[in-house]
Figure 1 (spheres, rainbow over the protein chains, first blue to last red):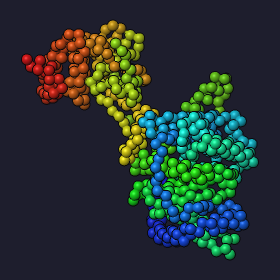
Figure 2 (figure 1 turned 180 degrees about the vertical axis):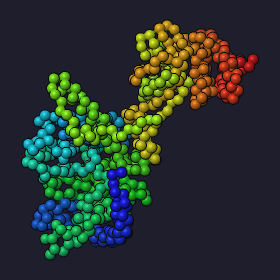
Figure 3 (figure 1 turned 90 degrees about the vertical axis):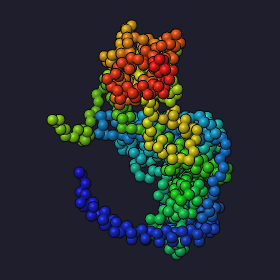
Figure 4 (figure 1 turned 135 degrees about the vertical axis):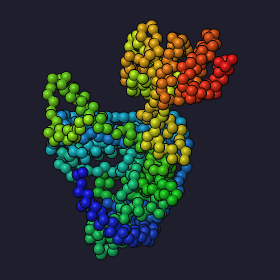
Length: 396
Length: 208
């Protein structure tokens, strides 16, 4: 037993005591947020302008929703699906470098799955695995970071979608798990920033390819915790004279967009479409500009919200938006009581790398190095100790 | 005669083995069918399929809660996902060089050995060797549905024997079972009842 459960128990009791108070406070803040949402329902142009002013003059790092032409409380019913359509999903997984292991390497593994709507043929799966070693494994400050590896994985996901979409019969809908916006590039050393820019460039190229092929693409964020719309409401409720303090002013803190829209969106319906206001969103220009909406993939009486991020070429095309909306609802309903796009789950299953896989790759590398007459590094003493078996008992 | 591959060996012991197969291979094997596993050049093991089971997993359990399951999703789970169909096989004999023995095999088959469904010639060769000695392996397996397993097996062999004019194979097999079970009345009654339901023509032949 590694935890001090007596101490944890006392803290849990304390948590229980304050939870009721916190819940009451949060409910009031949420009600306030809903009021502000309703009062700004049609105030789209002014709010759009105010958000841009704040980002320009008071808080360049402002990350929130930029209202467009659809009312803030609007909801849009489930559209009809085209009879035939190719649906493609991709997901990635990685083996991170382990300095405690005998050999140091990394792997990016991307799985994709393709289904033809209107056909009973089984979907086809594709896996692309890339081993990173030698120069690919190092930056000027040392071994490649987990963040950079994750970036390369995200870029590979979008690239494989573009490759598969180029050979698929149209219309084609593609999606990945998580936001479309790549994260990173701020922290880390200069080499990491260079690598981020390279991954971003490849990622934008893949997106441009998808745009050129007229492919619908999206990022699906399950159980989103962001407060993009709520942050916009905070901007809306802050008087002009206090906007200079907006960076630290959080009157609706702890309310999420999911909590805001939970009771506003009927099952199967989507929210208004917003543009993404953020510093990094500037990298996505023109047809690639990032947009999003919320989607209730749940059932009547059991709402379940996801955020769907789309590029401008999808956001500005009603037919594409409707096809994506209907496809994601159909895909989520395939999973029954726990809605989540079926193909995303299958892409995850296809891509996931297990500990056994990692051990097998390690052994393959060790064998190859030995065959070349080279020495093998040793397991660290720390890792060795962790792998030591527990006490054994004499069977009597 | 065609050779039908029905799967590969997952795990084995002296008294039986488990075969894994794809959904596309499931059309051929059936409960009570005789199968063979070539292990070495002159050595193969025979067995009777006594259970065919399809395991679930988390995704399948979740999918059954959906209102309607898309045909493509069903095909995906049957064709692409790594959930093999498993068949449990009772070892009933082996062949060493040209000779067939109704004894437990000296060595089990190995992982990933290929399992074939016995064709009519092979069925006749195995069941005609000796005097139904392999029945005791079935009768000893108290956990199995012995009556149903024997009925299914006798039905399949009888069809193969009739093709070469050996009409009374089923009657002889049933009479042998009665002899083997003469001291075990409850099992005898259970087996006879099942045989009467499953293969009434043969059973009427035994009574007359």
